[in-house]
Image (cartoon, rainbow, N blue to C red; front, side, top):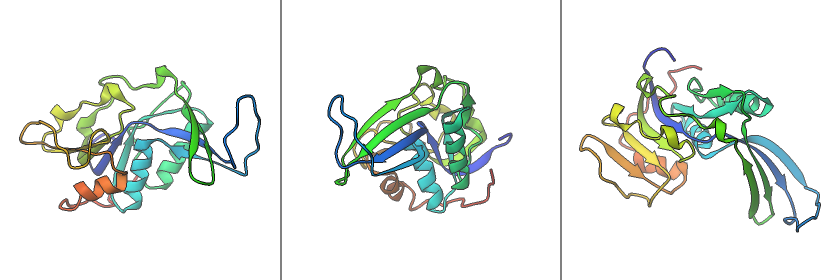
Length: 203
């Protein structure tokens, strides 16, 4: 991205590659069990949010870290195939974040996540000035770059922190919405009145 680009929702945070196993039950200590099925796919709250926005017909971009490994490559390809702008995705030699998820038939799950500390994006590493966005979604997993507000007056900021419809103190020119609801419900709360930019950008 070498110029200002209009985007409906900028999603900032975790991009995790999920290894999901369908199991009858979760294993006991020192027990090996067999899975009924397996799927590998991209995950992470911000990355999932970007895909959801794109599937709703809006223009989404994802800001986060993906390693230069098979998991990062697969996740990046999934995002691009979904129509998510990935120009602000950081790539590096540190491994991609991974989650192993074991899901029982009733939907309950056990999860193990790994992310190397060196993969967190540093303060100032993302140039938010090149993005013109209506909404910013932060998922809390990139804590060092979560305060670009001074450069984005008049923007709505969507984050998964507090209760739906709860507002916090901010300059009058800003509208800040915090929500614990799903990405789709959060967008339903914040986007109806806006004028989406739709699909006029290409990766």
